[in-house]
Image (cartoon, rainbow, N blue to C red; front, side, top):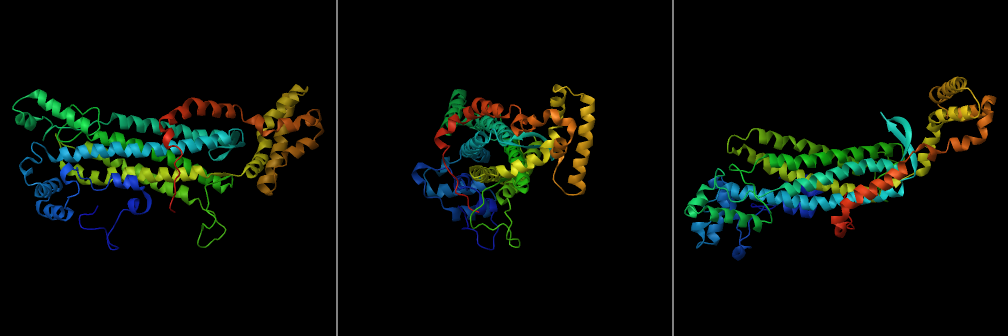
Length: 455
């Protein structure tokens, strides 16, 4: 994989490969050589490295090296082609295969999270807006918010993959002039060659119009959807980190895992933190193809090359590891219902005040009088919570006030958390059935693969 041998301890190697990415994604973006049937194993990487040091041209270095292996074929190797015939077509294969690696992994994350949402579809939990307690939702319904974004990402990745075409046989400026000359002006043969090469590479279509390169907006289209998925995963993992602070939900934690070298009691959400860290890198990488596409002059300039060698593989490698990590997280999410229940009890009396008022009116009370009673009692209870650090005692104050005697027998029903979650369970069931499960059908054979995550 390395022309000059593997990197030593004194050389830099991307941690995306050495620490994080899967073997299949690392292999996909390893140094790629078009195999020739008769000399598939005869690639002399050392010679290629020497040739490149002399020629300062990566493709021609391999052309010369391959010619050394196949001297009889040397006169026609690379005939009529340009470097981008090799490089750009290869990149399109790598993009396509990269999506093919990512999509089943995304499907597995969606599957695991769907199971989680279904299991906890009816478990009430505090909703938060502005990170302040709001009306109740359910643990499963919140997971469906994450799932909806992931489902959008899956549709986007599938579309980007399906929209990819092959550059094909286009020549130095995209006019196919060299191939037309080779075929002595026979346009049909040029088109047949373009079609045959495209089909041999596994593509249904080639771009009809190119310059020397395929449009760099193709890179934008591919990487923008990866970056968008990065934003989704960052949001999901941030939510889990916030909930872990509340001790309501935790990511998996190994029996002998150490959360902090100093504070032995800590259970840090390191998997989610890793996802957030790498997701930011994935989002930031989108700036590269945007700028590259904007500065391509006329039929092409070479200032795209070095940038794309980094931004394309790193985007897929980064997406690969955050999906693998998120799968590991979603397979082992831990929920603490008793903690969630305690938080609900702390806030629910305030949220139930409107229900209490309506119950009093139904029992013959005056809405304005009841509102004033509740307002005074609520402020007194809030003072206990904020000024004295005590528990929310609004319910005890309501029970102790003779004014509310007509509804005391109904308070348990009025304060049942399940009466505050609306249609959340029904929304979860319909969403999973109609929108999520059908998305997973093409990946049924690969859904059950588990991730052995190295920490």
